[in-house]
Length: 250
Length: 250
DNA sequence: GCAATTAATTGCGCTGGATCATGTTACCTG
DNA sequence: CAGGTAACATGATCCAGCGCAATTAATTGC
Image 1 (cartoon, rainbow over the protein chains, first blue to last red):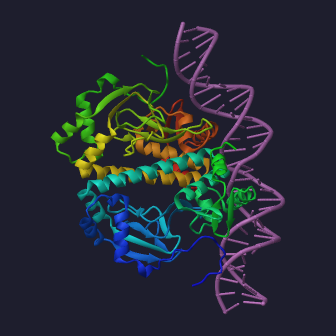
Image 2: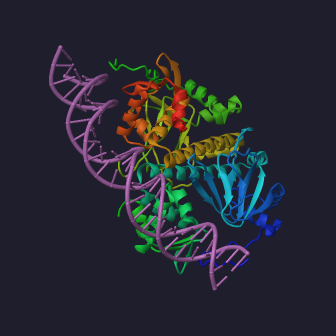
Image 3: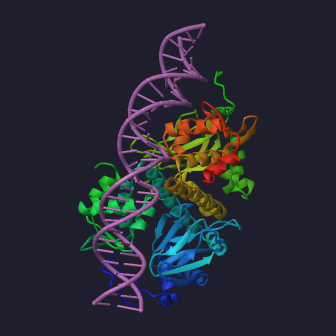
């Protein structure tokens, strides 16, 4: 369905019903934690996954839902939200194709601490958490790769803790934009385009600020020529200066 | 050497040179990730570890040091500090006996993002990170246990991100005291005593506040009968009310 | 026992950013 | 095409908590 929205962000082109067995195999082969596994083993693993498409804005699971499955983004983007009592969510991460989410916990009674929501048209694969644990037990290389991914996520979370403790809102917003540019950025005429619909609310939730503060700061960045932006999109026009702001050198 | 300090916190009694082979074996047997391994396998693993004693305040490794080893606390307490440009550290975690720290990373060129420092007289075991990865590859149960620990740490870090984004300093300080009570608390006449030297600076660094704010808040808690405290110690006298404050019900 | 030092406490002024409100603009839908 | 809505931008006000400083109390070392 054609949108009139003027945005440089290209929509996800795959429709949910095209999340085929071939796509699944392709995605699973590309996952860092299945790298190096024999193709026939990956095919066997593929058989244990389910897939499902989600519309933009659709919730994959809610915080408080019992943990049953581990998910992998096959296509699209997924956001992980932690709720606060004040109703202002914290946006913990934006997940791109190949990344897993959901809980790996061995505990039977556990619940998801976060809500997962499709930011774009998304296809996600899922597998029972217990089965995934069996795969990790059968293939130590998978478990080691998961350890590495968890390690990197913990490092990023600790960095965010440092930012929230000691950096200004402007620094955090600059940092957030840079991280999004690193992960989702595509070179375009407008600069390094963050290739995903991105509202001021999203930026605020990632940077630990309010929408008004995010809006003011993005307007200043725009006026200063650091970014280009419109509704639901941002492109980095001067990453070096943004980096200087994020690091407190400006 | 006798101290005049009036504190209910008992010092660590072990001296570094008493970090014996037997203690090591005892500690390794008790580690969650070696649970279930045959005793002779643990003995073989024990041979790969080194141990070293650290005085209170001594640095185990600095942020920026190249990653070489994985550490385990055998006795005492270790704090993990992330530095900020303003000189005010973020205290990411206090590690108790049985907990690992250092980097598990596969990357050859990586450095520690944090500084590890003995909070008390401490004995720490260490092993080459590569060797530990070999152990994880050889024993999937070890890798799975490490995944579970990383999972729990990530959850705690995300919770702290939420607190730093949306909670007041008073709520965060109450939460910090409760977490320390859960982890290091021992019932005593003064209440649930956090059995570790704990300065106002430590509480501030864990709660994302300044020393002055932490001191004001602890003074208020003390006057309200929620805690008992003195120099370098805190005991929880009314955890239920602290919980109410931490959760924003008060 | 005492001087020096450290850690904690308390006071005061300032400000970043939250809160609340309103205005503007782009987009959607009938 | 027009009315309505959502997203963004901006203004005004307020305050939590920081920064700085002074004071007090506990501890250390001689």
